[in-house]
Image (cartoon, rainbow, N blue to C red; front, side, top):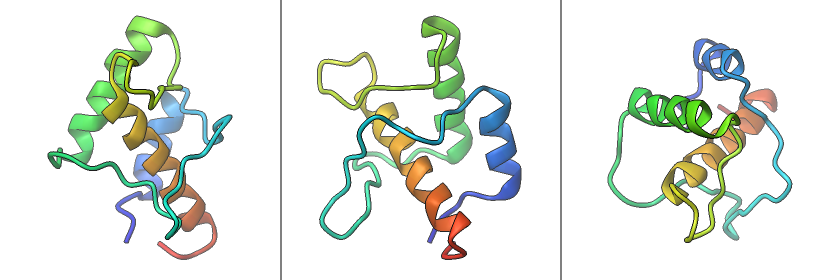
Length: 90
């Protein structure tokens, strides 16, 4: 179940979040939720803001050599949650 709410969507849009990606890495079950330690949504949001401040974009790479690939996976998960929310599945 998605934790993406209209308020969180607005927060992401306020920082210039891009809802589409040039490539979408999804698992066979259709999910792309990141693995690893679970951070609170607000902590990921702060990491996204720091990335935007440093690189000027909210597009974050998921490549292993990227500065923060786990953030990239979280960004992809937000996109997946948004698609689910738009379809009424969240």
